[in-house]
Image (tube, helix red, strand yellow):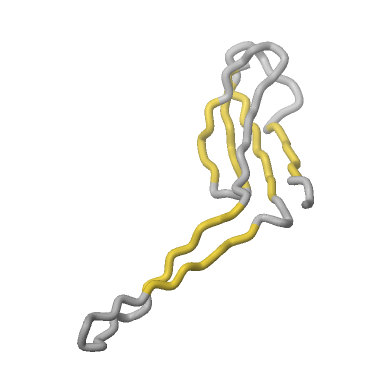
Length: 89
């Protein structure tokens, strides 16, 4: 199994106390597998519904952010491949 990958960047290299820090993390996993399940319902007379599809991800990723000062990072957004976190300097 491949290890997940991540890159991260901050919106600045220097902050004054009270400044907003924005952390952007791009992440992924080459072996995460989506699976599609198709459902068809058939009654006793042989009438069938239209196919319904639902998807799920096997091996989902979890992202954790911490720094060595104990600062709290709050997730602002996460679309499954790019996450944005905010904290106060």
